[in-house]
Image 1 (cartoon, chains in turn yellow, red, blue, cyan):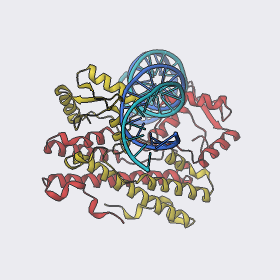
Image 2 (cartoon, chains in turn cyan, purple, brown, red):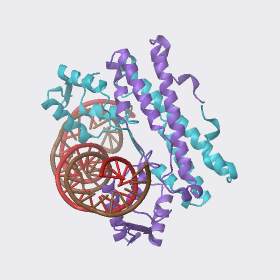
Image 3 (cartoon, helix red, strand yellow):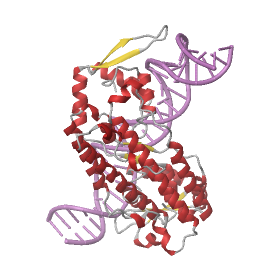
Length: 179
Length: 179
DNA sequence: GAGCACATGTAATTTGTTACATGATTCC
DNA sequence: GGAATCATGTAACAAATTACATGTGCTC
């Protein structure tokens, strides 16, 4: 993120809260120690840039930091994606619930997805919005998958409302597969 | 899981490895201590059920355990879903790469999704497969979303291959939104 | 002058992974 | 006989969250 513009730890956290939160999260207690570590390793430099009496540290990426960033971008040694969702875990065991309660759960999970579909900002200033292409692509991926899942849940809801005759137990989307 | 059938810690891990891995993961070092804790709290009972000389502990859910399970299934106090994907994080910063490298990354990420689309088993025995409806629904959700994301990446790949003229920078799916 | 956003960190705790250990059974 | 699967745990480590602490600047 420092490669795009020099920033404070607070600004990094703000960006992580908004544009990146779909696929990566970070807290202050991760960011500040990490910036200190990066500085020790020479990947970033820090200098004071107070706003009035309020202290502020601006960090900038170094040449060695840029090299490390590019090496990471090119490496295929990624950690496998992790997805963890207590709501889906509940749904997995929803056979133990009465049909009305099952429907309530599905409705709640669907609404939760809609709430997640808020206006997306890219976490950088207006000036950076134009030249960075991939943050916008990722925002689109989030919007599209979220919309898809919402529709999926809508169909599941409808199929559960039909008190489930013989054919409807395999999930709502099985009849419109793309192959 | 014990509510569906009495099981060993190992069997729970096997199920978690397959059918549930899309939205929840657990390791032996979480499962075994947790079973002990549940037993201390009276939610499950343990009895020895060796296979030959090989020791095995079978756990069964108690009435109090069933009550706790139902209370959890009905509670809306779920932890917010967490998604963490180093691949998407790389893509987010892919503006720093050359166009050919960007395309390579997108290809790798798309292929990774396909690999994930393996035949799905529900993690329970054949006998339980029939009566449990929601595990099948969740498996369908996984298959459908995975297929959707794969197609999304395919379109992104195509749009990046077109050397990106003016209009193609907002993501490949923006022209077929559902609203 | 109240409330919110900006700003920075540490400490404690919780959670999760990886490595370490061991051994029996079953199937090819 | 060898490999894969079944089976159970502990210890060490790594990662992440939550709580704790503090204070300024800006806007309504």
